Length: 116
Image 1 (tube, one colour):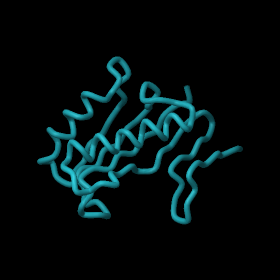
Image 2 (cartoon, rainbow, N blue to C red):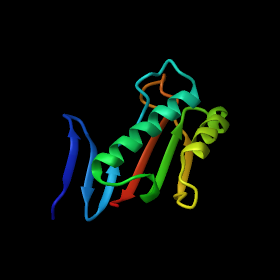
Image 3 (cartoon, rainbow, N blue to C red):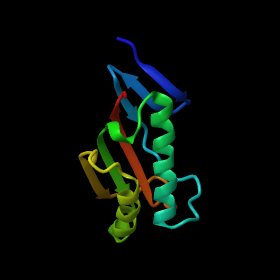
Image 4 (cartoon, rainbow, N blue to C red):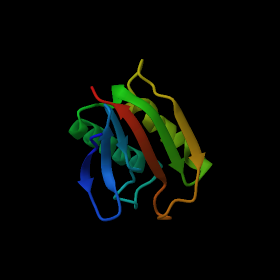
């Protein structure tokens, strides 16, 4: 059983690949001074980059979980998601309100994808 990990740190790896499935760690914005739309764009940029490094892209997302700090951010988050998501390849998704580890983070996105 081979598991490949990318961007391995002391606490977590950003990516794990096993049996043609890619698991991303929760992605958050680095620039937390921005609003929900800008943070969501940055987070989805991280998802794009990591999936590319792992040999996949957003058309291969199998499942997505989105955690937002307040349901007041739901419309703004969705507007960015709708611009980004590959039509015809929209994955199963859950969105929940959650108290995030860093209060300045407005959104965290977890993705599971298949290899391309």
